[in-house]
Amino acid sequence: MTTSFTHDNRRLAEAYDRLSDSQFEGGKRLVDRLGLPKGAHVLDVGCGTGRLARWIADTVGPTGRVVGLDPLAERVAIAREHAGVTAVAQPPAIAFEVGQAEDLGAFADESFDAVFMSAVFHWVSDKAKALAEIRRVLRPGGRLGVTTLARELTGASSVTPVLMPLLQRAPYLDKVDLSVLAVASRGHTTTDLISMVLASGLELAELHVMPRSWTRATGEEAVDFLEASSFGNLLRIVPEGLRASLRADLAEGFDARKGPDGVVLRDYGVIFVARRV
Image (tube, rainbow, N blue to C red):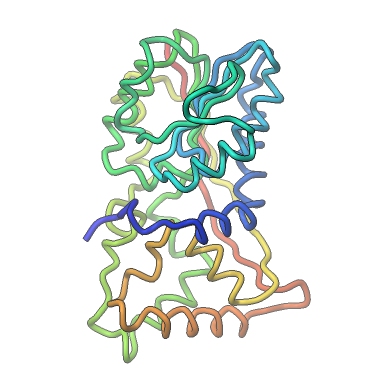
């Protein structure tokens, strides 16, 4: 099994829109690194429900242009609703479309000043193809900003010590398929990421490993966030009959670690900026 985009639904999309503050703030920090000027044309790949794209639109102003692209139709629908746009008649400042990073054929060569992929690159199946497409649509001097996960850092996540012991005991033992999650099945090390960027013809401008944390009130809310962030894939690592049980066990495991401020989830992410020369 591989990561699927077919298990998202309106409930998960709305939960993500409600619970994605941490990813939104991380996306804003990424945008700040690129110092977008007024009037810039920007592509937000993996835009989700459009929170970052709308913030970028305010940054580049009415003379700029922002396009949000996402493979999840429910999230694109919410993005359009929040921005007050439709699929048929969209204002020039912002648009949202259903699509994937590996196929940017709807966009002309050298049509964007910047491309962003905030908390999405690890979900992309063909990263080399995606990078080639991004390089094509970037103007000379244009930059790509990415926040993602690296395979060697997954063990440092606070999710790992809750999830993995559960999967090593009954009733889940021998019934787990981690390939459902892209991070497990197609994870790449930081060195791999650097090599892929350089092989694409982009110039790596900066790369950092950054600690990240976010707080949820309860274990149930933490699972809601993780399930919404994985667009319905998290619980698919076990057979359908065990998913309600795994959800409950995960919530209980997170609650057992709850402190005065709630359930604190921590991990380490990779942030990099590349430039088309």
